[in-house]
Length: 211
Image (cartoon, rainbow, N blue to C red; front, side):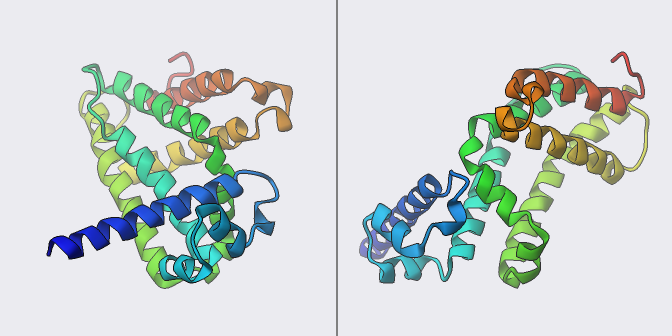
């Protein structure tokens, strides 16, 4: 049993090293030209070992995307300081935007995996993994919205509708933060984008443009 546990730990350690190597190579605009051979070389493993962990480059990139979002969920689940429901919502939006800012190296991988054509050809098992993660985000976020409604600080309406609106606004802010100075002078200041997006989303929640 101890030997088997050691093998599992070794397998997981090697997989983490492969993912780290892939991320390092795919954190640039020309990530699409990166080959599995280059990833294996960077991770200091043979191509056979690489394919024991990942059947294709798409699978490897998908797993990197999952790692990114699982990291975000883990961070959001950390205990929050006490505060009003609205203050907590404002804090978690800021926290999530900051996470995207400091993990900007994932942006090409995440954007690639978000493409419609990628999702259409994705293995059904990958889709199930992502849907499970999406449900986990919903299970975490819905109580925050419900608490704010119960406290009377935001109007009562379907929670799924509220979360959809927040997600749409949030994704727009993320794209601006990830684009940075490559897109426009405004986006060269992530803090300004973050502050404006938070004000906009909170105002939308409470129905007060001055919130």
